[in-house]
Amino acid sequence: EAQVTQNPRYLITVTGKKLTVTCSQNMNHEYMSWYRQDPGLGLRQIYYSMNVEVTDKGDVPEGYKVSRKEKRNFPLILESPSPNQTSLYFCASSLSIRVGAYNEQFFGPGTRLTVL
Amino acid sequence: DAKTTQPTSMDCAEGRAANLPCNHSTISGNEYVYWYRQIHSQGPQYIIHGLKNNETNEMASLIITEDRKSSTLILPHATLRDTAVYYCIVRVAVKRNTPLVFGKGTRLSVIA
Image 1 (cartoon, chains in turn red, blue):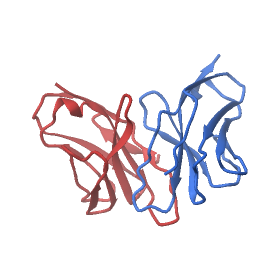
Image 2 (cartoon, chains in turn purple, blue):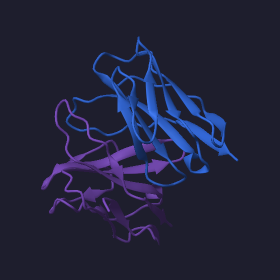
Image 3 (spheres, rainbow over the protein chains, first blue to last red):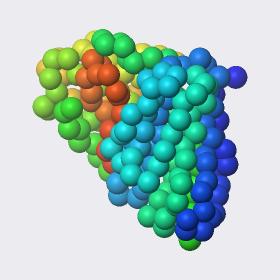
């Protein structure tokens, strides 16, 4: 089944304890992205990747890191989490981002993170 | 990208058609209309998109007015599982990065 998976789905942690949220897609998609969703603020993009070894900042990158060593995986790293990073996180992927083309974005099931 | 305006919430009886409107009066010629939905706390799900012609797929139909200033998403036979927040997004396809800008959307409640 074509899908985007995220792990863990739920995580409660403490301030400053490094964590990684994994994201994997099995559709051979070039483009992957991370969003966070907060009440009243909607979905905001954190980082995106156009392809392997190509990553760039989205609208709210502070406090996050990403890597894209393989096409299928795009982990989100919080080196020193803080309470303001408590949020619902979504990973998304799409076939490619080409000028003049649009490919639907597939979203993962979400990771609910609480930082105490 | 053009701004969209959607009603905050709507109700629909199960089995009836759900018609979700979206105003995008400042849309420009190269901007597409996209619809996504988000069932409670799940990842958003793509529904349909169009430029100027009406579109239909297995999930829904998209009707775009001739002046392109508004559109309607139609779920022909709404079920309880269609209860979700529906987002209308207007965006240029010609972009290197395509973060989706989700507004507040319309909360559709399908009632038995």
